[in-house]
Length: 211
Ligand code: GRF
Image (cartoon, helix red, strand yellow):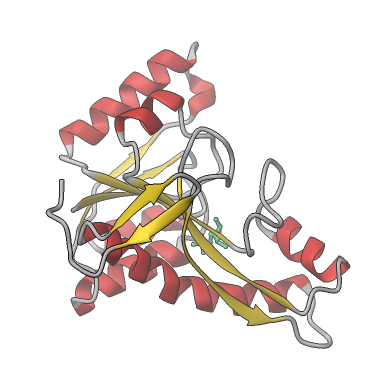
């Protein structure tokens, strides 16, 4: 699996992926880091690990088709076979979703289908969980389809919401879970062991050949 990681922010999930690859628990080559922001912390981490970086801002393109074409050609140039979205705050063009169908995962800091969709990112998610007085939150890894946060769910796990939590405390607890969950889901993808069946995801006990 030759992975491109798309990240707009600090990149702690990207770091967890790099660490899992280094530890041998994730069999993948991190072939490219893609960001829409030149200031993204993820790019610093990529440079430290010798991972090629590709920065492009969709707003700099006159039309979505040329943005998509440039992105697709960068992925092809680096031999990318799979994509992990790790805090990437731009919509993935539909042509890219189609070209990498069932080969793109995203991680979301809540228990989807709750607290997903447009506008539900970062602290907005954790504030909504706290406002609802939920007893649990968690993280979800899902396949990416054409909508926000709607693709079939691969892995999900929970953390408690504790008395006195603010959005920062809850975000930190959820992030620690994310750092375990995402490499595990990506390893299943790498082994060809997950495939969607309607809204659900089958996890095979016998690995399938990787595409
Ligand atoms: C994570 O909470 C992830 O679930 C969400 O964006 C955040 C990215 O954090 N999609 P980081 O940049 O990986 O630290």
